[in-house]
Length: 168
Length: 421
Image (cartoon, rainbow over all chains, first blue to last red; front, side):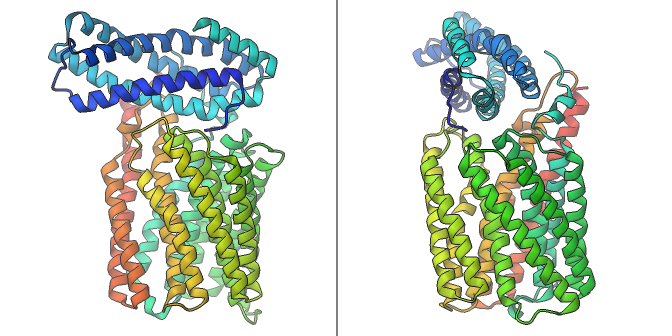
């Protein structure tokens, strides 16, 4: 990963750090719990994790992806970078339904608990989400942040950073 | 959701998949051939015989250079943010190198000198065009000095390696050189520590942080490592050419410092990584990186005849212990990484990395590879041919396991695509 020189790059990186911290917590929990043992959602750490999953995943979808697709990718396209942004937007399209379904299952479980079937589904979707999102972040940290530093001028960078901060 | 237009990939920094994968596929096959030659034909107790030289070049040119070329065409543009100028030129380099390596190895095995010369010239041509493409990609790039600095030294070393290698290959056919040992040693040092080592060092500062999701390693330490590595290489090669062991030892000491500084900065970055659960592939990567300094130490021992067969051990540890172990670790990660990025179906789905990687086979490969490394190394030092042969059998089985990993990756990608049309 590169040293991050742009303001908007630093903000995106902060978001990535937060997402990775949650995804790793989720991964550890899912691996430890296995798909056969539904957890007790009345247990405080489990409830907290489920709340985080629904909140941060919703946040990631509506704000982070939305900002990138609505503001950042067009700015990069204007600077001539279209191949990478098309690829990343395409990945957003794959992650979004997984994240939304996972968030929905987490909210449902917080209200009614898990059944063996819903837990199995949550377990499988959760692991898929962890892998897809971390792989996606890897590419953004590697390619996108470097492209921002190289292609976005300081004024556009400041404008984008302001838009991103407002959406937070 | 919308499908990805593959033409955008070609215009972007992601090369068409056949470009890197043809190099990786060839490397996997040459890996098997190299061990097979060692098992069936090599008589290591007689030193660098023709079959041993054939196996050595199947590894250095067929595996190491092939992986380095394919990987650098795909990975260097990520660092330089510039596209490789011509995928077709990359494809033609592949054919020159593949044909050249085969001719070179067959020539050595059959002691057909003109075939060795022809193969050497063909490989040299391929690698010189590689050097031109890499230089073209590096020109005008002023950020990421640690990566580009190492890549520049690698590129220049490659030109020197090919010049010396061409002379040595032609000498086999026409016999015009008097003493060729200094040239052979300089050629070996430039090929392993110059081209391969510098490329591995430079690219590791991008790849390892990317795999572990960590910040970039310290640029200050990286610059110091670059200075040590570059100066060390220069002194070692000069020492080899003028036959001055103390000059070579000084070069080796600087190389040790360079490796130490770069390794330290990578370990520090790795400790602060965001991704805590890293895959199995990091084990061969760290093992290979740790064996780099050991290979230099054994080279120094060989300079002053500290123990019998230290020279053979130096070659073994450099080519197989350090470079091959490291590069196969990198390869087992970048192959599924690239395959996944190229596997988007028209419906917009891509496979998960865990669906593509048959990790059991890479674990099997690593165990067999380490057994081979230790057994052959011990066999060379203790002069026990049976140990060398048993180690080579283990290496061959490991190479087959690695090929199984590559084949399984291909099969899983095909299956994913057919199930998601």
